[in-house]
Length: 189
Image (cartoon, rainbow, N blue to C red; front, side):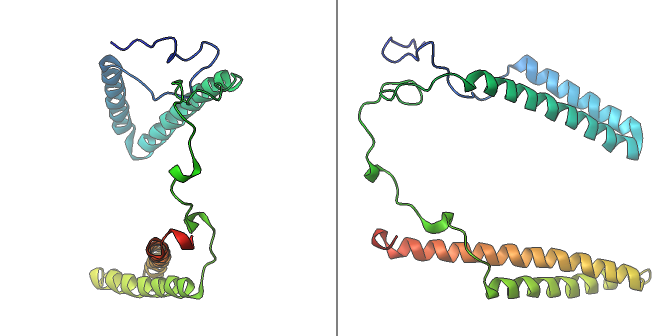
């Protein structure tokens, strides 16, 4: 078992930040049992009551977790920071960190404007999504399709196609920018 020496121990007046949640097997089994009971109650509540029950329980759990996290943060918030000769984990630092030990700053953190190409690809995705989605819905449900359902289906697929076009074009733009920056070398950053 590891026992910290006085040189490596964190002083009593310095509290570490948030630690990951820890639980044992008993707690895990209790949570699994509670989730099973909740799912059984949701099934018994029906199609409308089940999701409402799940939403209620999730809201209560989020409130309890937020309260516990806020209480812990408040309790460690007024504790002074460790002295500068110690690392954040409480161990003594062996040497100062130089600026050359870090990777160079990339320009990926900078904000860029949406170019004309991205707008065109977003609109193209919306048009293709509306056309292909509307055609697919019409072909699959030919006997039951009405003008209103075809318009609603086409507009829904148009929104999804526009979102896919935007996300795809933005991903390709960031990928190309990162690739070009990586191949330029550190002197151009």
